[in-house]
Length: 114
Image (cartoon, rainbow, N blue to C red; front, side, top):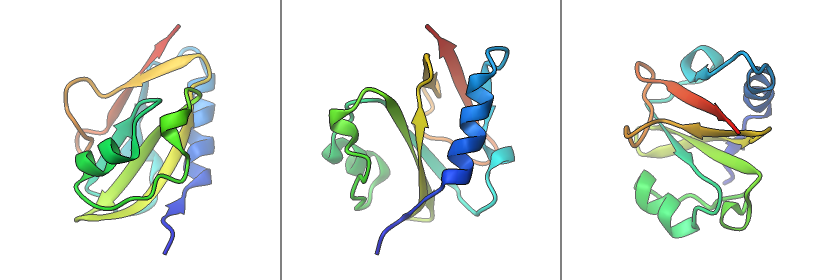
């Protein structure tokens, strides 16, 4: 009963982040599946925190609580996790400001270089 890791989406995100001229990711334009919420988790986020935030069971396959090289983006349709991506940092931090989660109409992730 595994949730699908979307490697095509990971590659699309990676190539946008790779281009230093880009400062945002418009997630809706990159997705080819239905979703109504997406949660962005920072490095070292715990399994408990992830489940508390998304409000459902999700076994974090990336072991994010032990990693600082990726962010985790988890997509939900209704109350079900439908897909996830591991976002390589590539010298950047990602943020969705104070929104808590993304929706198809509010889908911008900011890229902050360091």
